[in-house]
Image 1: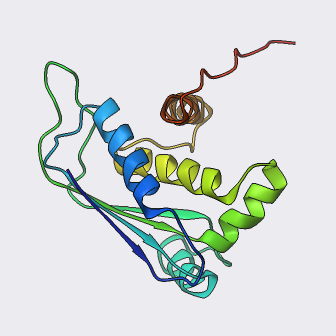
Image 2: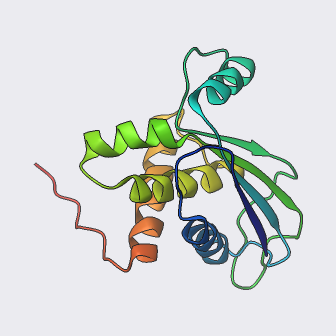
Image 3: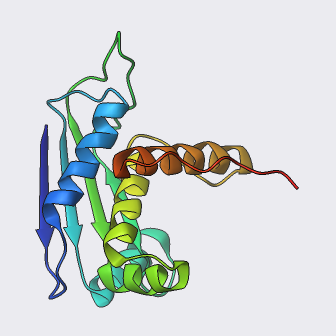
Length: 157
């Protein structure tokens, strides 16, 4: 599995850990070990340009995903075909703001955003409530498994 990270910002990022979480998610979802993924970290100005160009939305965002070969998750019996998964673009400065608001580290936020980006590349979305529940549930499960924790039980009120 080829996962490349390119940090174009002045902020430090644990590139090995971003590769590891990307690999974990792809392995967990039975994506071909020959798949290719690129992760880029950029500054807010560059992210805002992408956000306007591709989403017609102002301001920088935290993560954007650009699928290439439209790969989908496989199964243990039938792994996904090989191909170029696509690119994930992260904005560490936006991630830093979100991490502070959520009460966790920037490193954890970047891991979460990487999981989120990979899921988008694999066809998951969160436009509809059912899609959001599925994607965010899987995102949470995968991140907790990667971090070696059991996700807390959902509580109902």
